[in-house]
Amino acid sequence: MEKEKLLKLIEDGESSTIEFKTSFSKDVIETVVAFANTKGGEIVIGISPKKEIIGVSFSEESLQIWANEIKLNTTPNIIPEIELIELNGKYMAVMSVSEYPIKPVACKNKYFKRVLNSNHLMSADEIANEHLKTINSSWDFYPDPYHTLEDISFEKIQAFIKRIESRTGISIILSPFEFLAKLEFIRDNKLTFGSYLLFVKDYCLISDIQIGRFKSEITIIDSASLRADIITEVEEVISFIRKHLMVEYIITSTPAHTERFDYPLDAIREIVINMIVHRDYRESSGSIIKIFDNRIEFYNPGKLYGGISLKDLLEDNYTSQTRNKLIANAFKEIGLIERYGSGIKRIRSLCESHGGISVKFEEVFNGFRVTLEKIKNSVTDKVTDKVTDKVTDKVTDNQMIIINMIRQNPRITTIEMASKVGISQRKIKENLAKLKKAGFVKRVGEEKKGHWEVL
Image 1 (tube, helix red, strand yellow):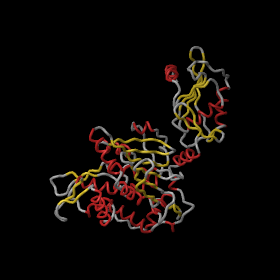
Image 2 (tube, one colour; image 1 turned 45 degrees about the horizontal axis):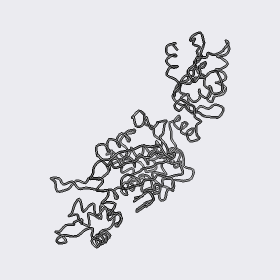
Image 3 (cartoon, rainbow, N blue to C red; image 1 turned 90 degrees about the vertical axis):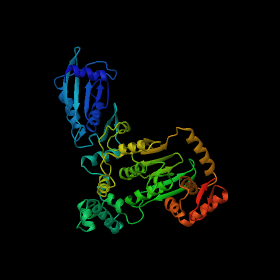
Image 4 (cartoon, one colour; image 1 turned 135 degrees about the vertical axis):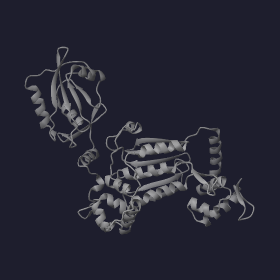
């Protein structure tokens, strides 16, 4: 290393790849391990954390002794490059550590990683993830010791194959189980964790998703608890959310009017798919979706994967890594994922183009949360909120949806209402009768040729 470069390192200070030490010690070995487990780095011995050049005492054997001590106390063995550099009549030792290809590396059975300018002891989960990444595998590829092939649905596997055939236009001439073995969804005739989640026959404990429509922070007016296969859950979650969205009907020159929901449906779909694909299914908690009047919160167990920080994510400064490779591959095969790593950008772009919706990404409670929120920026918004609050004190959530649909399309039929709300036509008529009696809506004109009016 040239003196100019060393002076620049000292001037910049400690970072995720630079550490200052006054002398060689156990801490130096831990830093070597931390650098090896992340992106590599350089340790400068003979300088204080305050950037004071102290120098280091050494003999001809010192550097070799340090290298041997690092080698003996690291597993796998690490041997950093060490060179002496003289500055202002004092010598400093610079250790250069490369990122190690086989992770994680330990120092006396302890595993460290570099976070900003300090070393952090890795958790059991982080250790396991680093090992899986090293062998180019993931948790969902491993055999499930608790379930067998009898626990998955033959019909669901066939439906999965048909979706691939429909997407690609290629016929698959293999039995369902031969096909799954070819994709490594089954290994040595054993069910993998991922295959169990994809094709579980009935009730599934680990795919738990709780979803609710909230009138306040503690008042739930509709809810669902999902424990099915994860492909089915995608559509069930989106269907539940769609039922509770407001919709306006845009009149066009064509006979069919255009629907515009208050949230971008494509962004919601992207969020839901990302939740299911990237969730940490080893966590005991489930995924939670909360729908409020002014926002939707999506919470998922498992923080950002692969060492990506929230800052990196928001600045698009990352390379996408997948926590569940088998599940991601399956979703890609049937067209639910178009390409890896584009989800966050797509969500932000969809919300921006839709208008009136902000999107927020957070790491919270050992998980990841996405919040879509309506942006208030006009007097009309405030007036609408007051009217809505007054009305919803006296009507149900479904009735509020019916009122909104009538506002947008006074000639809407009870059959159309039933389809959009997700309840029977008889229930729609019962709700309309209650709304009429309460004085919220009225029918104008004949039954077939008339229209609805919101009072």
